[in-house]
Length: 113
Image (cartoon, rainbow, N blue to C red; front, side):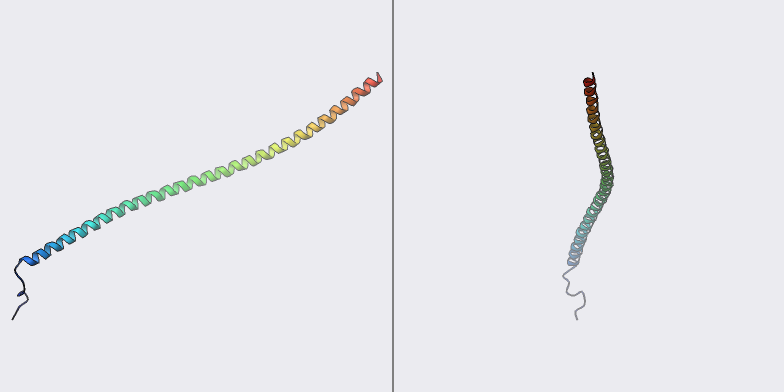
């Protein structure tokens, strides 16, 4: 009868298989460690990019608020300028009317004298 170990050629074959398995395990462990370290670096980079995006969004919000404030100031200054131009136009027409009255008075004085 042939036992379980009867087909073996000697003690060399299982040790070669064992060494090959150890080499495969070492390669797989190295690849796993390498992938893990790359993943950690990429996660750090993603976290940095997310914080940079948050800072950019906050700065953008501040700039938009400042822009709207400045646009509001521009509108109020335009309204003030329009009001002053209207006042100037009204005063100019009043001045021309008074100049006309002064000229009439001077003409009437010249005729009397």
